[in-house]
Amino acid sequence: MKLQQLKYIVEIVKNNLNVSATADSLDTLQPGISKQIRLLEDELGILIFERNAKNLIKVTPVGSEIINISRIILAKVDSIKKVAEEYNYPKAGRLTIATTHTQARYVLPKVIQRFLRQYPDVSLHIHQGTPAQIVAAIINGSTDFAIATEAMHLYQNMILLPCYHWNHSIVIKKDHPLAQKEKITIYDLAQYPLVTYVFGFTGRSILDNAFNRHALTPKIAFTATDADIIKTYVRLDIGVGIIASMAMDPEKDADLIAINASHIFKESTTKICFKKNMFFRSYMYDFIEFFSPHLTRETIDKAIKLKNNEEIEAMFSSIKLPIL
Image (cartoon, rainbow, N blue to C red; front, side):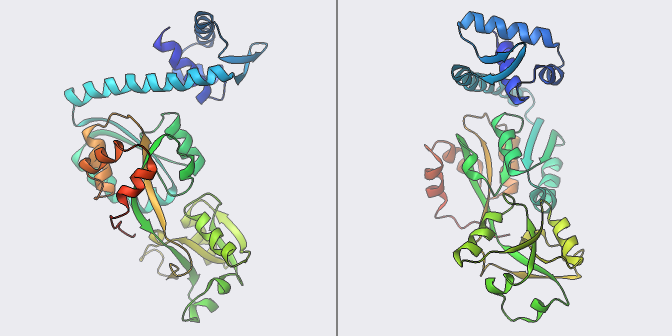
């Protein structure tokens, strides 16, 4: 059994069982990958993949177990490399983060600026995606940290650390009828077409739950993954915007009115996620603390030692998180 063989089967799953795409991603030849998989299956005496002629069509139940263990082994190997890198080059390396547009556009810029000033030799990569894509990236190991609000239940066997709370804002043009109301209610919002996030994005579940609690059905006129696009359609009179409050720019959005909707929608919590047993480089600790100051190295290490995320939640229950 070779590490290379384990890497091949993990990468094949990452590439949706497409051996050709796997060969391209690993810069090697397809026949070599197929041969090594066969050799591994012969050595183990089992089939990792079901086949239709020469095509892989499904991971077998035992193959799924082997692939999961292979991910752990490869992660350990990667940790060994990182230990050596931390010793030899403490301020150099690579850090990859998967997150949504709202985080990348409105929260991370100042954090990244500060981080790169302190660690100019760290190659930093930010990947934007849907909550599902962010989950997939952290599970398959293509990213170190995931920063998200939605789909937290999908992060199985991961560490989730709460970073900050945030609220929604109602965004309208200055001449909109709601601009004249002293206090907007959810019943008022139900009377107008709404422009907001796609389901599964940036606190959208909070919005839907609020309407459901009052037995109301929101009139969703337009949805997007990007708060800037939502504001564009508000300007076109498509509907009333509902976005994360942090996504309002006082200068660029001076033509719009933003009304805090914390009395209508519950606050959301953004969390940072990473794999259990991941080796932390020093700059990784610092990035998290720059992003969320209460998450110091000591606090992170303490949370990692807990049994599960329920215990982590309890640990942070007495800490007052910042509100953005």
